[in-house]
Amino acid sequence: MELTKEQQEILDGSKGEVMAKVMKTLVMYGETFNATKMVPVTSRYGHIVTSFGIFILKGVFELMDELLAGGVTAKQLFSADPRPVDKNVPASLLEKIVFKVMYGPQKRYERQLKEMGLLNEDAFTCACYFDEVGNKPNKGDILSWAESSAVNYANSVLGARCNRNSGIIEMFGSIVGYVPYFGLLTDEGRKATWIVDVRTSTKPDAQLLGSAIGMKVLEDVPYIKGLDKFIGTELTNEACTYLKNFGAATASNGSVGLYHIENLTPEAKEYGEKLIFDDPKYYVIDDAELKWIKDNYPVIWKNKDAKPSLCFMGCPHMTLTELVEWTHNLQDKLNEVGRKKVKIKTVFTTAPAVLKRFSNMPEYKMLKSMGVVVSYICPLMYMNNPLCAKKPVITNSNKLRTYTSSRYYSDAEILDQIVGGKKHE
Image 1 (tube, one colour):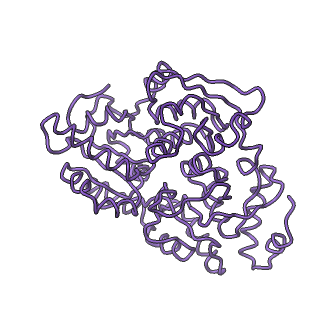
Image 2 (image 1 turned 90 degrees about the vertical axis):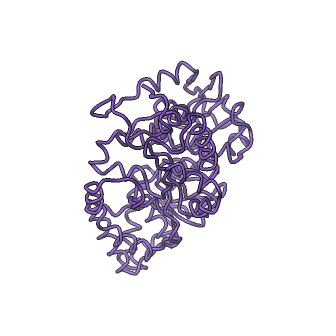
Image 3 (image 1 turned 60 degrees about the vertical axis):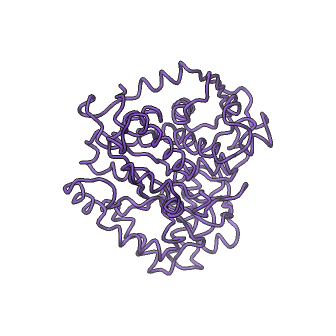
């Protein structure tokens, strides 16, 4: 790898031994992927995926102490993934005790994050690119992020450039201000090796479509045709909400860090089919394919016929548009069945900054009156509690389904179940 004079000096210790270790780690990481050079991080802010002070990450806390003791802090302020615990989220006394043990170092770790350069108290969300959060990169920005759904969204919807880095590596990039140049940072690495032809009769479920594509193309870049006729050719709030959920499913059910949608996403609009490699692989998705995907999801509940005890919505965090839409849909469904409150404990999760804005809207009181909890936590971290993992939890998130024991249902099926209506098999 060719380093600039400044980069070589940092590696040689010009900014201290600790900073030299950080640079050496990034250089070794880049060389693993045949990076030719290091390039500047140009986004205004960074993002760190490791936001949870779980006791098994002892090495991370020790690393942070070493960095801070060496006078090393982030060159750019950063947001972080969601907090793992919220006292307002339903949990038994025993579950709360386990949470207290599991995430015992949380306060210590958050103090370390603040010293390192945390953006602000509200900067805990997997969807840092929300307008309310303030960490939305520009087209062409070079990022040092690791959160899979955020990397996916930034690359695809915003046209920024970021590899699917690992936790801590992304923080090192924010500290030094450089990242290795390979993969999705390069023009060649952003070209598609798959054409995905969407031929469904109606607008496909974002979660199912993303799941199908992720499982098929794995870590490759797909160029998607036929979807624009359902979600339009402009990145409206509705389209971006759809792509948030779609992209998270491609990134978790596969390892997709970037996708292009014909006539919609910025690079596809600019370059069209020039983004496709010669002799691409081809995948057709129709109604039957999506049904087959959904019907074959494994159910890992101990009792597959158990009545759901909890419903989680918002993985990734819900947008303000989603919160408002779900509030009205839920109210209409409850009126339809003649009830005032949900029959299953239900939690909607969103970014703290979005929650603050939402709490001043009439829909917030409506949602609370229906018995729904609105929280800032990460549902995945909640489900990491071994006691919570044993519960029959339902969700409309393909990401949460993939990483936990929760069971996936479509939006319509979720509505039916949480109001006490039809139970879906």
